[in-house]
Structures are given as C-alpha cells and as structure tokens.
Image 1: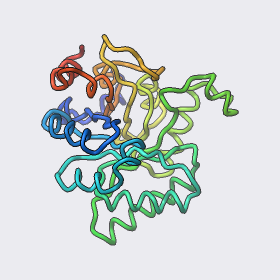
Image 2: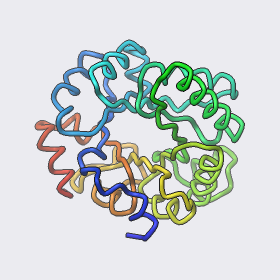
Image 3: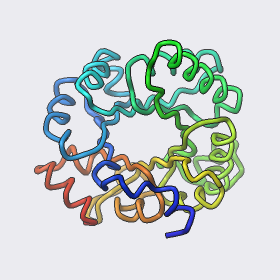
Length: 248
C-alpha cells in the first residue's frame, strides 16, 4: 500500500464498518427486510435513485431514526442553487453521506458545501459527508468520448477529484482502479474515497466495467466500499458478507 493510502485510512475502523450495502430494490418492504437482516453485519446502507423514487424521503427518515447510517446516492447535478437546496433537504433527513456529480463544477460544489454547513449549524444538525462522483464505474474511454470528453478515464478521475477537494468536499466516488491515483494526486489524507464496483472473486461484473474485490479496494486505499447485487441477491446474505470481508 502506498504511504498516502495508509495514512488516509483510519485503521480503527473495522473492515465491516467500511462496507456499505446498496439497497437497489423496488420497495421499502424489501429494503426494510435487508436492513433488518444485515444491520449488525455491515457499516451503512445506500439508498439510490430506484428506492428513493419508490419509497421517498420518509423511508430514509425511518432508517436514520432507527440509527442506521445512510448514504443517499442521488448524484445531484443541476444549477448551483437547486443542488444546494436539495442537499440541505438531504441533510435534514439525517443522512450520513450524500453525493453530487463533480462535473457540475466548482460553483455548484462550493455553494452546496456552504449551504449544507450553514443549515446544519443553524439547525444543530450533524453535517453529512459531502462527496462527488468522478467517473461512473459503468463508463470507459468510449463512454467519455461519446459525451465529448477527450481525456482518458484516469486523467478525468484525477482532475475531478482535485476539483472536488479544492471545492471543499469531503471526498469522491471512484472506481477502485483509480484509488491509488487519487491518493497520489490529493495530498489531503482525510479526503474520503468511496468505491462501488466491488465484486467477490466468483461474481460476474454485471454492468460494472472497472471492478475489484473488497480486499483489493481497501488495500489500494478505499475508505468505504459499496456492494449491492453480490450480497442482496445471495442465497445466504450474511455468509456472502463474511466471504467478501475475508477476501473471497
């Protein structure tokens, strides 16, 4: 492991506390069952666009009221005022972490940071971790070119990570394959890296293209990893968690 990566990771955090389960399911009932089954075995739960659209903010409130750590993964990307206002509402839900798209630019990220911090201070709320999406793990060089981006994936990830850090955000979402690059690029050892695209050795990649195992991502310097289908679709989900934590 590189020196920066080692310094960035809080060694006091148990491996299972780094594991975020993606509740990518169609109903609150299904999601609630997963939370009840897994809450003592993992660190947090991710609520993304599918579940949020189906179950709404009230389900998020239920999770946070029960003491569950929630990563609200809605990838806000709009004009600065709209994103800042949405992020404030997310903070009021009590979420632990939320994200925006880094390609929204510096003004969007800075205004969101300022608005969230101001609201949380005024309303005596714990500020959520605010992170930015770099390049989706389903994307590759061809995908970027289709949208007019001529950089290689690695260069785009590094540039967006630098932009997010200089805009005052707490970290980024990036493929585990770019974690070491981000650690080398960003000198701030408290800068968080959250990595989706985590698969056990035996799993298929599904629609993810830039993937790695849980152990590989942590060794590379990931602070938190997001896992969905390999666990929530497993016959024995707790066993699947343990196998992943054990490097299988």
